Image (cartoon, rainbow, N blue to C red; front, side, top):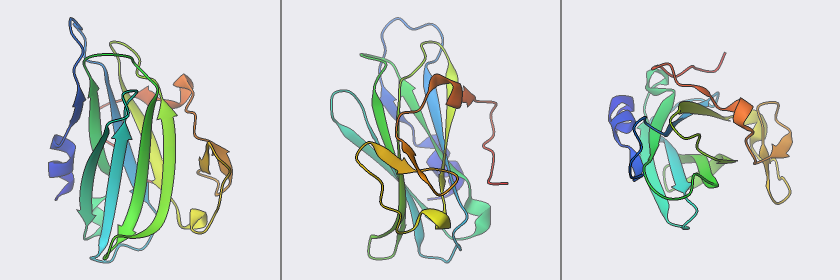
Length: 157
């Protein structure tokens, strides 16, 4: 699935009577080498406990970053758990990152999740995940970490 196809594969939760969109665009990037057998897997689980999965095969660096929109249209605004994973052929986990956030009613925001080589083999405590500095941090994403979506995903600097 191409980056464009992944972008159009939206995971949806329906909210009645919402005039403005309520959405979080999950942007996943990695500094891992990109051979033809790397998959980015994003699993989003809402308050009802139902997981929704999206998979993007990454064949070249141009396929990154991968992104998927989570549209909220019904029910509680959170918490939502998003797990982003880099997997190799045979479904072998390379690195993973978790985030827990709450939608902001009427806003389209971006959650950036970097799957970094520095996080390979890092074991964090419960309710923690490997962060951008290669160190463990809370899975809880503060509202200030969700930036306004401007229509194109940023890559890793």
